[in-house]
Image (tube, rainbow, N blue to C red):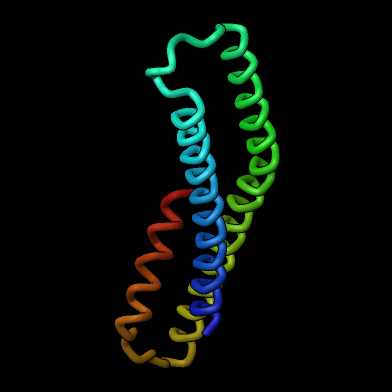
Length: 126
């Protein structure tokens, strides 16, 4: 049961960061769209000073986003580490209990196997 909770927690954490990544992709798409719409190639050359100011504004927005998401990325990594450590301790405890009680667990269901594979994949990212 604890394994399922840990897998669910890890999955929820991954989903939230996937959403953040998706949001960044959307922002990039919107910027590209606005530049193409507002400054089409056929409109002639643009004043380089204006372009530099626009580039500076974009860089500033990027730095702001980076500053907002950097602590989240650090917390995400720390959370994954704690989840993996707890998972490993839980698995060790289960194995010790099995040895002491001669208890054998039922084979994993397909869903549990999939969850375990996903967890192993996430653990290898650390």
